[in-house]
Length: 326
Image 1 (cartoon, rainbow, N blue to C red):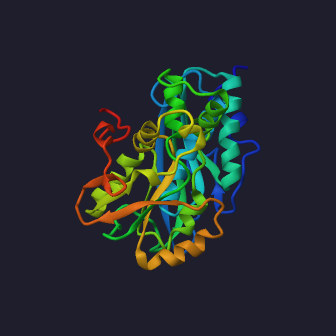
Image 2: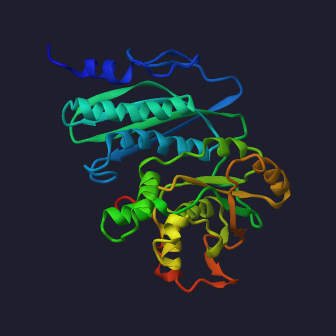
């Protein structure tokens, strides 16, 4: 008997997957029956990854499975949400058991880690494309948003920026780095770590937040637009990894941090009045975020500075990060 669509679902997306108590009915019916906790809002996010746009034929299937979930969980993290449920729409040209085994393994691993359950979706034949919708919870009134930054708020970022951009530049033969550094930055490109715990810790201290998916400059720009404010950034305070700083010139490293995407770190603002509470919370955090600047009262104006003066290379930096159709 031929191996068909429903055999695919049963084999790769039903067996041995994590289960949650708030899922009354999951994969296998016309729809899922789900229970939203009392006094919580439901946060819903969606991302699509398309072959030839977001990844190429050399990208391991396990990495694709991990990343399609990670980018959605990063959006949930930016809103302070607890991840809960995922639905997957998978379009594939044919049934490749080796690819499906690896892809589903990567997706299931990250679901296990963050306590998510796959509750439904769709499979179809066509050019390789994956769309995933993630659902999460946030207590009423505590969701992080882009539109809350105020003049005087401090600007922070988590982790280090630019590594994934360097990995992509190496793949495109625009840069050459040592093998050890390449392995490090390739891991950041293929297996990003959404800052879920950090996002939840920021609920009562951050005034705004966004995940850095298209580059710091572009994504911070979304916060500035939504909040009708400006920002001043000290480029020497932007956190960079050793792999990046040892591989390219200093200003090139800053360029990667500002304009390359796929970092999936958080950029957020903290009012001066909450900074002490924030520092206390972060004292228990394994990697304290870095303060890189401050919000100003100039709507839409992003000033890049070094030692209090305009950064001389800012005009060479792209006006924004990655954007489809541009």
